[in-house]
Structure formats: structure tokens, C-alpha cells
Image 1 (tube, rainbow, N blue to C red):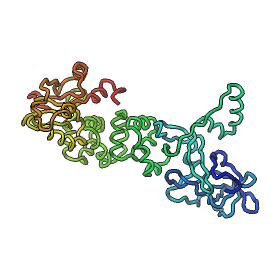
Image 2: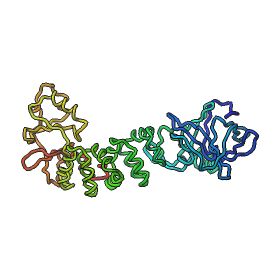
Image 3: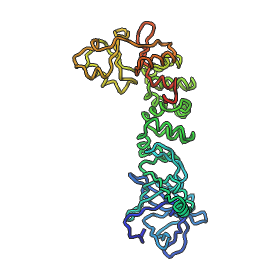
Image 4: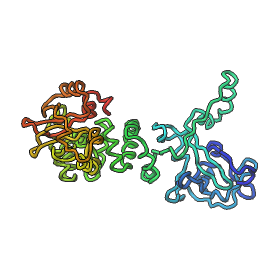
Length: 419
């Protein structure tokens, strides 16, 4: 665009839509109806302007062939063709069609927002999408009331209505499944805390919810599922084939995985279990044999245990090697050769002890435990009384079968706190 002395200038999409476009001789071609951008990082760059002639025809005009004069766009080269024949390059999107009045995720504020306008930065001849306007001012600008609103608010209240602009790097569009499959999209969603991402997914409609969830990598999807309402968990997994579902569920804690599979139809749960790694599937099946609100149903079988003869150095190496694959690492449970629980050692004690010290000299033998069939009220009382982060679950022979993590109890006793 020529005609501006500034090397940099901000422009809103609402100022460009409807702009009259003429050929080099000044004859009217039509009006601007959209802008095409290429999804580059850090900012999408405008490549073409879509102009409709009003006769069912359109021209996709390169940004490089446009200059501005007398408030109009003047075009040096163009081709008019029927709307249906327009072809857009891969990795491109029409901004008005894709974003305006649509929902996006503000990954910085972890909120769903509605797009009222878009702001561009013109740097010399390049034109970049830099902000998404989600504020009331953007809506007033769109409908032509911005100046009136400014006059009214300043005259009556001495108040200036602020812009609410989200930098593009924090914006995740939701309208198109193709956008959600791009690496840029996955990276932005994965930056959210799983609890925030779960809240966002729960606020979406069923189609957007599935599209967002299916765009996530298995680890992020698993972490998000653990924070999501059980009914929505089921609907999300039901939208996947058994192989994809198993990949995600394998990344969940064993207790969460068992709870989810227990809520699925039997045939679907069986299909997913067949696709899971055998050892994980066996552990989950064991948990599924216990009623959900008893100790056996609340526990996880993924925890740390070692013999009393092991040294602190060996224990620290063991924890370092296995911590990523277990659900709970803050207590190390000491067991004999038949898995009878002898005591436990906290990470704090391990950190301050010498590497040569044996665990039997460090372990606390004052064992607080629950039985497999203990109900949630008794379990909650034990947590409250002893202030522990986890409780071991013993069978009738005093063998440790699993561990109840406090968070798992909260999900049953107070779901609003546990999720």
C-alpha cells in the first residue's frame, strides 16, 4: 500500500471490510469481503484480499498488487472468477470467515472469548495479524458506533472505553478442526494448566469439545481428562477408536483410568483394555474388581516400595528411575519379601539422610492404613486425623495392595475440590 508516510501503522479489519476496490483505470471492481493470511510465526501475514463483485464472482487479489488512494483500494493485477472456483493455499485461512464473531481460547487468561475485531500491523509493505479484539469497543467499531460511544462516555462520565486486545500468540481458534491440528495450535493449548484446559473444554459445545480434545497429544489429553467432569470424560473417550483411547488412558493415573473405564459401556471398556499394554491393563482390571467408593476402588497400585535392607542411595536412584511412571512418590513404602507393610519413609527424610543409611533405620513403623473394603467416610476421617498425603491399603494378611492419594478421595467426597 502506498500513500502512507508512516513505516508502521495499526489497522482494524472493520476498517477494511466493505472498502471499495477499483482497477488501475479507476473502474469499480467490488468491495473487500475478507483477507487471506498465511499462518506463519510469530504473526500470520496477509497474502491476499478477497473482493466480491456482487454478481456471484470474486477476485483473490495479491496484497502486493494493491495500493491505497482516495480511500479506495487500487488494483494493478487481478483475475475474476466464480466464487466456487476460488482455491486457497494450504496453511491459509480467511479471517472474517474463520475468526470474526467466533469463539477462541485466550491461552494467557485461560478463557473462551468472542472475536469482535482483528488488528493488523503494517510494516512497510508487509501486513501482519497481531491482535484479536474481544472488547465492547471492538463491537461498537464494527457497527459504526465507536465515535458516538466515545462522545457519550467522555461527555457524561469522563470515561474512555478501553480496547481489549489479545496478542495473537495467545489466541487459539476453535472453529476449524484443521486449525486445531496445526503444531502452532497444539503448542498453545499445551501451555495451559490441565485444570484450565478442562474448564475450557467443558464450556464448549460437543463438536468443539471433541475437536479440541482430539488435537491434544496423549499426555496432555490424559492430564486434561483427569480434571474433567466424569460425564464429559465418557463422551470424549466414546468419540475415539479403542487404539487412540487406550493411548490416552495409559497416560492417566491407574485409579483415574479405572474410574473412567468403569463408567464406559462394558463392550467399549473391554475393547480399550485389549489395546492397552498388558501390565497396565492388568492393574486397571484389579482396581475394577473393587466398589468405586471403597478403599479398593479409590486406591492406585502405582506407588514406590522397597525392602528394608536397601540404602538411602539405592532408594534415591530407584525413585529417580521410576518417579515418572508412578502416581505417588512422596512416600516410600517399606515391605518384606511377601509385601507385608513394615513402615514408610518420606522424601524429606531421604534427602537429609546419608547415602549409606539403610531404610530399616529410617522408616516410621507407626503404620496408619485402611482395609480394602473401608468406606469413604472412614478413609476421610483417617486423612483428617493424621494429616497424611496418602494412605496405604492393606488386605487381611497385612500386605499392601495399593495407596489412596488424598486427591482421589476429594473427587468422591467433594468433587468440586477434587477436580
